[in-house]
Image 1 (cartoon, rainbow, N blue to C red):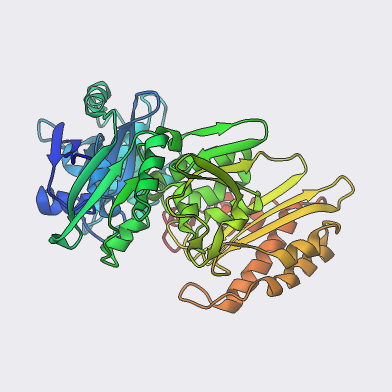
Image 2 (cartoon, rainbow, N blue to C red):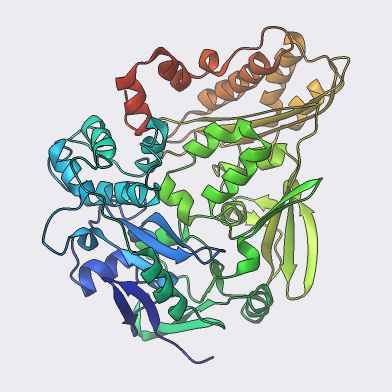
Amino acid sequence: MTTQTIRFLHRGSVHEVRDLPPTRTVLQHLREDLRACGTKEGCAEGDCGACTVVVGELDRDGKLALKAVNACIQFLPTLDGRALYTVEDLRQPDGALHPVQQAMVDCHGSQCGFCTPGFVMSLWTLYENQPAGAGLPGRDEIGQALSGNLCRCTGYRPIIEAARRMFDETRHPRVALDRERVEAQLRSLRRADTFAYRGPDARGAAHGESTFYAPRTLEAFAALRAEHPQARVLAGGTDIGLWVTKQFRDPGDLVYTGNVAELTTVSRDAQTLTIGAAVPLEEAYAALAVDYPELAELWARFASLPIRNAGTLGGNVANGSPIGDSMPALLALDASLVLRRASHVRTLPLAAFYSGYQKNVLEAGEFVEAIRVPRPAPALRFRACKVAKRYDQDISAVCAAFALHVCEDGTIGRARIAYGGMAAVPQRAAHAEAALTGAQWDEAATRLAMDALAADFQPLTDMRASSAYRLKVARNLLWRCWLETRDHAPLALCDVDVFAAFAADGDDGVAEAAAAGAAP
């Protein structure tokens, strides 16, 4: 396969790249190759948001979609056929500040300034994605837009005020991107066939070359995967990117899922919700929340918006981290996986997928094609909870999900309970499930199931939590599920969730700090 150059829109024109490693990050290219140093490097792992840029691509309807992502963990070839926007793009022809930038100045939203370009790009995405005349975005929407940006000197209140002020057209006439022009440019860059880019590996030209493959069809992807079983499947790069930036690993050849239309679709029938493996987490959770609105908090608290814009549900599942927040809910909902190798397709329950710590039963050349989730049954009582040190952008100490099918007589016909952070793999709690199955859904049965968790898990102690703390939290989350779903006097969310309680009390300062990921 002939190697090609990486082509993407940058500063209004087509930018071409060759002879760089396929694992060269977007941030490295901006700062070191292009000397576009407005984008900052903070953590190099997608946590702080100093490197936030915006990627534009055509959606299924051929319209421009803009998403904030972390440049520090995005590999350069993933930009092929897309548009890249950085803080330098906001400069106006007459040299004036963009309304987003001017609002930050007017509201005193910057002190040291290191994090400011990232905040500005997150706010610019919100600004551009807010239709004219739609009114101001809500407080929650602003908080989500800023969830991937950390500030440690200014404080979030003036930045949140800037998010409101930037829409004030009496102060700042609206400045909008010429979307039709960008859409035409992106259509001209669209490739009909597989994109293949070859460059020196992460160690340099003397050590050999690596190839980045980006097929456009499921058939081509399956053929490449079978032909190159040693190649690494790359989705959003939110994990593999850290292998390169933190562990200095060379992942070798890469097969990219992001251009395969069949892997980026969501479909429903009467029984099943099917989510393609390359559907970004933000879209996947939006689809799941239609059927299971109880996932709203977990959706909002899964990493940050830039991570959810890049990372995929299929990647989170295939990675198999014991602290991956998607798997407990999917296990409790009895999800299954569609696995494919060349033309052979099989379906496997998610509960049978993991064989050990970050190990699974995928065969050589096989990959996750889709996740299938049963549609909700009328008698289902479902809850999902996450406990971490911060509200946003934090790794779980414990993540739990409970799916109970309660019969008309109040007995539990089936119980599915799953936890993350409690074992080497995301895992169901078989003893707790057995304690509930056939029992009345009442306090006594709940306490028996809570005691049974000690037989299901012997969690480890690490920097996030001790073993005793994890087991106590796991028990308490089951108790919370009982309090929320019992037949008599079920408690409202504000009675069992500290962040919801702050919001209900109208404590704006605490709620703002919580929504922005800072300790109140």
